[in-house]
Image (tube, rainbow, N blue to C red; front, side, top):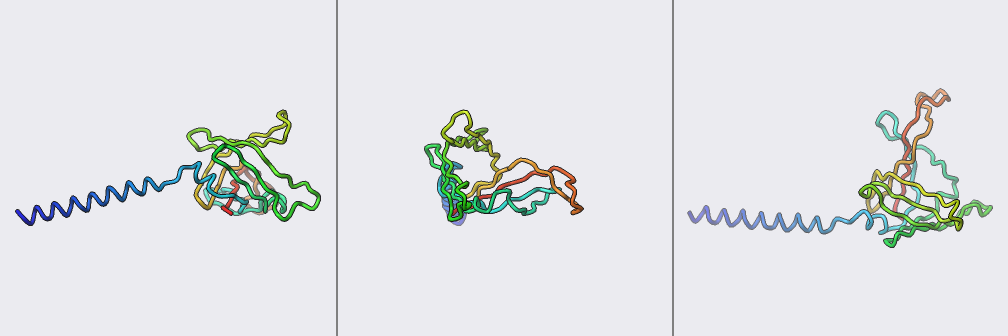
Amino acid sequence: MRKFSSLLSTVLVVSSISVVTSCKDDDNQKSRTDLLTGTSWMVDKAQVEVSGQLIDVPTDLSPCGLDDVYTFTKAGVFSSTVGLDDCGDGSDKVLNGTWVWKENETILSVTADDGDPDTDNTDDLKIVVLTETQFKFENGTLPYDVNGDGQDDMEVKSYLIYKSK
């Protein structure tokens, strides 16, 4: 009986440690807001999805837009800063605006404030990945040449991927 009691005590101790450890892991999980606002973001790459495969493609951003840095605050404000390459003609502009979560934090709705409410632009970004180091969202569809003959064969999903700075 003593062996059983000792074994039972050991099992209970191990189970208690396991429960405490699993609770600690849950406590350490960051919210999507914490992940978004915990770093600044820069464009990393663009991808398209062809027949279930992700293929890296050149972004449609001008080269000077690739070094811009985007920051989101917990107060629902976002801003960008122009990188070292300002396009040479000043066309690379600072962006400011607001952001909110939609649809159970699967959609990031970003409104760029250009100073004129009639021309403010809102984009709803469907988040695919959001970690401490990567922010990936669907970027619509675009025509794509699947077989390399120079003719666009199909519409494919595109993604834009940002990396933490």
